[in-house]
Image (cartoon, one colour):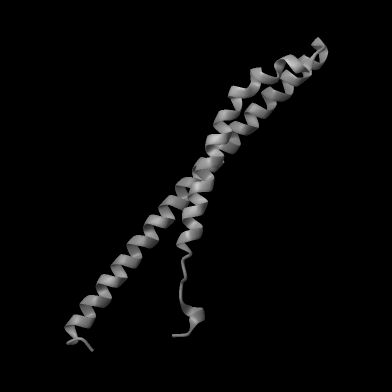
Length: 104
């Protein structure tokens, strides 16, 4: 077998992706807490109304983005667990085969 016919899984990348997606999810959920912090700087009522409209639209897109991030996080977690299980299963099968052949 050559090096091009082997599957190489970058566990560090999967772990960091899982962590980054969790951080993004936390940030997206926490944005809503800051809405009232900037309300006073909008000034004039017409500007304030347009900004409220923008924020409402952003909330809809943020919700959709949050759902996508959550789904991707679940997929990364499932992939990570599946590859770890596969590695363990292959190790056990290899050790079993090795011991059945008398250590050769």
